[in-house]
Length: 427
Image (tube, rainbow, N blue to C red; front, side, top):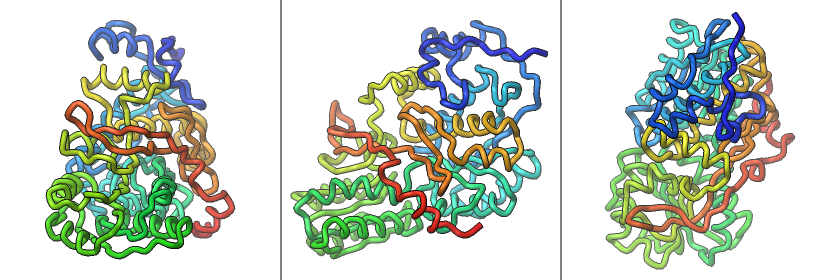
């Protein structure tokens, strides 16, 4: 049977990956204009695939952190629909996803990874959010020689000290995002700094890199206090009181989600942020910033995702497709899920195979176009060059958002290839 490739619309072509013609079809573009998937079905015949499906085993903390992971799932669902509307992967095969919830527990993540490989016969693993869970799945991937595209876990260990042939990571790491923020923090007159971060791999790594990189740029700074709340269980009153007692000039914050909201509310009430700058990882992401509404902090220096202000054609096309499909605005998780699935599909098509070793070879050095620009998975350390948006928080029309932002290209915040290779275990 001859394989069909529907003609892509001008809108769809804006989102075409460099190594994979998986874009919005005429049907999906029509759906964006007329009301969704039902309109898409009536616009063309379904694609007929001549080869066996290629399966992706997707794992994430859907019940543990729904604010990020539900938009993330919607992002990869949109990408999957686009990929299959354009003919699937390898020019013959439907891309299928089998998704599992890891319940925010490393042991559960490894258990479902084993189930996906053994019972569901998946060809690739993808996903995870928390750093300790990403590391657990990366170890499983190495032991089982299974390609794994880690979407979100930010720990540097996943590509450096514990990196392996089979694991690749999309989002900019704690080192990269700390370096982006240090550029701005070093310009502040502040000399006395305090930190607050969740007490697990992600928070520990972020604080360590921020301290090291800031001291390199500003040898005159000192760190006078540290607070390490348990993730998801921040006791805001004592934490804020301890930070205030240290009388810092500025604060580096790594809390997120419900902990962030409690920290902001208590800190504002007790005057912790008065005449103090706060530099904060991830706080500009809409899944964390928007729920605070007019209680969102003003003037914090953050990494985030000002989705409604990015006016490149590719990004505007992504936003239009996402909002038409889900009747909601995209979050940082949405863009991560979308690019993750496009990268997986691009690697499979480049490999011309659903087998592990060709896919791994294809991922090393793979470049795709994305709504945020070109993204390359470096061959040296398997870290992608996806960047982040750096700016300041503000409240507009009763909701938290970002202003005065710039896109920091991840390629500019990574060590040279030779240095990165030396940080990885010998293979």
